[in-house]
Amino acid sequence: MLYPEKLQPCFKDIDLMAEGLVTIKEAGKFLGISRTKVYDLLALEELPHVKIDRVSRIPKVALKILALKG
Image 1 (tube, one colour):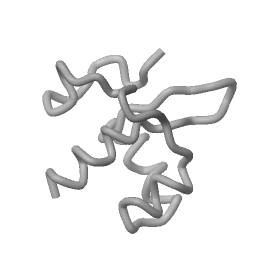
Image 2: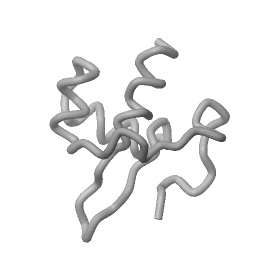
Image 3: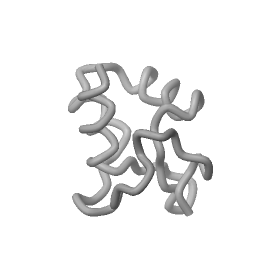
Image 4: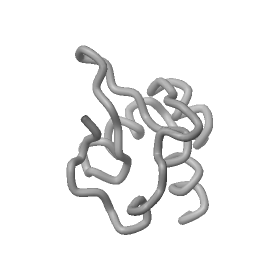
């Protein structure tokens, strides 16, 4: 299941799984921010994510979209 269930408009109609998933650490490195800030973005529902067991994974496409939004 993709979280949050209600996606922001910029993520609608996009295949978020097309480029795979990354870890929180990888997402932070890609965006140039700390892991804590990545967790903040998840909590604020700025980034969609998938939970595998209790571990969150973020679609790489979503990171690219977020980076372009600036």
